[in-house]
Image (cartoon, rainbow, N blue to C red):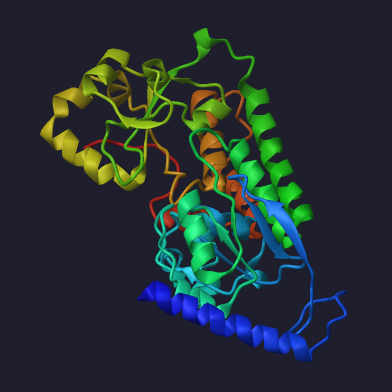
Amino acid sequence: MKKITAILMSLVIVLGLAACGQSGNDSGSGEGGAGENVGERTVTDVYGREVTIPEKVESIVCVGSGALRMAAYLDLNDMLVGVEEADREYETSTKRDYAHYYYDVYSALPVIGKGGGTSYTAYPEEILTIMPDVIISSYQQEAAEQLQNETGIPVVCVRYTSTDFINESFYTGMRLLAEVTGSEERCEEILSFIDGCKADLNDRTKDVPDSEKPRVYTGAVTFSGAHGFSGTYANFGPFMAINAINVADETGETGSFDVDLEKVLEWDPDIIFLDPGNMNLVEDEYRTNPSFFESLRAVQEGEIYAMPSFNNYSTNVTYAIIGAYYAGTVLYPEQFADIDIAEKADEILKYFFGEGYYDEMVADNMGYGKLTLG
């Protein structure tokens, strides 16, 4: 029934627009506005789909994980005419950088979908009531095509992955969104800033011999929900950025997984990072099995540190960079002696959003520092 309703609404709107077009300016040159032929162009999205969009895009909605975050990084709020319900819940929570910073903007916009992943969660009827020029999507391809078929509105997919440290798929998605919205200059500024951070992190650590590097483990990470101590990452972005020795890389895994605790005992890492947002799970495990934790050298020597999750509805690029700098101050104190993490965090947040809010992260248990078990 919903699909039939959506199709009928599309037909009504298309006929109405056609009537307006017949009574308006048909010059074809078009500067935008009701009744004008503004022209079209074609873009190729990340799935290789050729999508025809207006020559000048003036309004958008974003669906799926990561799409609205990229729009926020490109400062496209003036184009937004609706948001997903999942992005309107972060007034006090800082777990999603963009959704927290722009809460006042998002909470005032119509809801156009439930949100929560890369599968189909859009509300096509609601999208049709506001008729954006383009739908920006990080859905899987089949879901994106379904949404385009049901609304008649072009859907451009900008999906990126988060298996390592801000990889090329993010750059591709950002540049595609910039092409659609005419925000190329802002896009290149953001990407250049990220490149500068990557280069700085690498330059500080690339010449440190492996024999002088501590062996590190990150646990209690968030992937598909919260995990306890055994939840970890191979190819962990912040560690990769500073050339750290991540013991989980020895497994041959390429992303997030749960490791056998006996393997952690075998590794006996020098330093451990834990997500403070999942410490309730770790504390429960500690009470149940204190001997395991007390057998670890890092626990005995107090070398346990906070590493707030940078993945929440895809990658918070800001937090990934901040996390890399913080890990650098812990693993390489000499090379990062000039870094104050609170100042660095606000510097990074300010570049992306115009203002820092690290004090709010700390208040929300998203800060960096030492942790104590038990």
